[in-house]
Length: 238
Length: 199
Image (cartoon, rainbow over all chains, first blue to last red; front, side, top):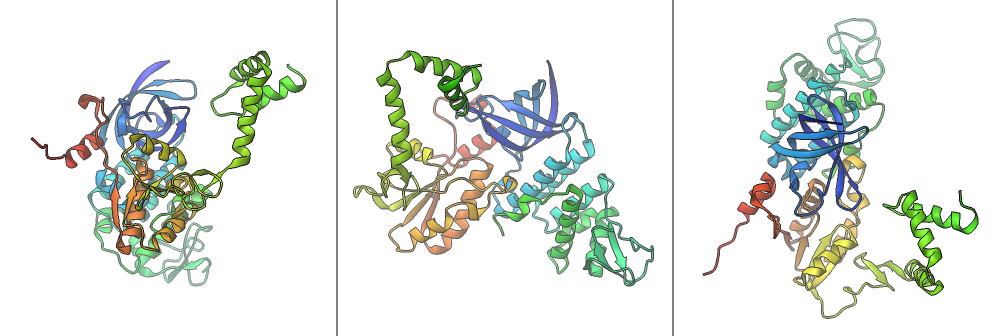
């Protein structure tokens, strides 16, 4: 048993017993951590609302064999603007679900962690229409599974890239086409995200390719995770 | 380890929430020791709950018969409707003795990560209850956590256009709490919702 300090984002929590919760967090230095927060459901708990999902916290934990125990928490950012907007909360749920699926217990992945914190900060600052799509693409790139978008994933041709197939792992030219059709506008957005133009993509207002890129990116993420993203299917914003 | 009825009793008790194998064994031996009538009273209580307690057809609170005690009580104010997640929340609100209206139990809160969307909650039934115009105020009394707040925002979106007054329970510091230990979100809301003090 030892005490450690870290920073993390609370992904979700489960009720445990009378007044406790098991809190699942992604941390900078310890990867995904599941820790018991004792008495957190009591109104007079010293943790209060600090361990709510979405909170970016600095914490101190006892490490246990399976579950750790939270001993102290301080909020670094509560992302209040996100919490108070249904559309943004729905997006945040998707980010949290993706990270919950990808992060591995006690296996630090600082870049995944930083990407999540960056995305939540951005969402707190403004509701960028392409945020979820950009997040999924960036995380796929971190995982080494970014879709191929600069040439045909099958034959390598660079002209007439008109289709997108998740099994092939990227765009396809006219002669190899399979999967779904994809517009040039949507491909430009994906290239920008993967090529370092994230800020300009996030600053873009909702346009004709917003939905197309979001569907493409979230489906690519679902293929990578080999499971459906529940938060997309049962989103309160439809 | 045990055989026959004692074993099945230990097994059944062990299925209850919060009761592990050791506790199950302890309770089973306790029941073995007590007078028959004490044990049978417990049996009768369990049977009665399973046979008689149902869900209220209007508000989905636990009820004995078709309607719960609040829906069938003519003295309750039908113009006020308090929306809660769970029947246990009604008990908590009732303990305050501050509320004289009626209730609506949603059966949970939105939790997209667990796959709980609006279709899994009793939202349509809530909208049906508002159609006759008797209700003038809906109090959103879901838990002040991420899921409960999302549910309240979602309901507000549906209800406000209907012209009914929609309110959300306040959040702030617990009585007996300590400012030093208050978290930023709670204290922030407490400041936001501060009240003028009458001299």
